[in-house]
Length: 298
Image (cartoon, rainbow, N blue to C red; front, side):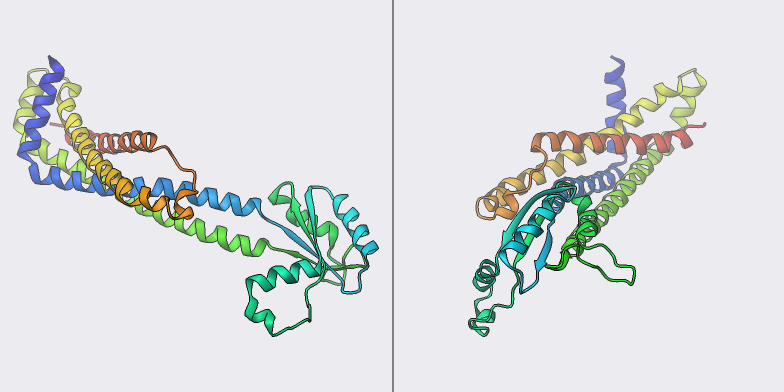
């Protein structure tokens, strides 16, 4: 019976403050939409970043006059180096064929000239140890620069710089969208607080009378808390409907044709809905509490 009373009072307050309630609901809607897109994008970005990190390689280039015996000796040296997971030998002929297939026009000008060296592609057991492997195969010389650990090694090249650029770009995307979601969350909280404040102001005489006859603070608070939660829940439901329509109308059809969309492993849509609803209710309750704590002193 008491909950029915609280709910009825909350609905009555919503009808009295329709415009502020609608503004708060619209802000919640936009916030949840951003979160609904942000969470899968962050997961996909993290997955792509981890995949790139997992493909970090170290290229060990041999000198042009290196013999097969030299290549075998260098391979043993690499395999004996700590943190090395695997080693792949790519002859200059294989490298030339691969690059010619990727850039036929550029390599057409070279004719039969092959400028590419024999190469070992080293995969570390842990991407974070790639610098340690490089330091073992080509330690820094006292005079500066690097001195290869074997006379047949021409250069040890780390691809980490390219990977770090990719990872930096993904971090910028995540931080930008995260900052936007945070700003919208704060805006939603403040709008809901303002809506509750207007409700309190409109009913200040009624609240004062209730306090005078002995009503507890929580007895007065509950209708306003429920009001804020209803606003947040309604905005979240609308946002989830938009997300569902977008998923069915655009994402699912495109996923059949584009591997980039289908590949990322993200949250199950049902779990995503639960997270978004929980976030909306939490923001709404926080906004209500922010307002009630300050303005319920009569």
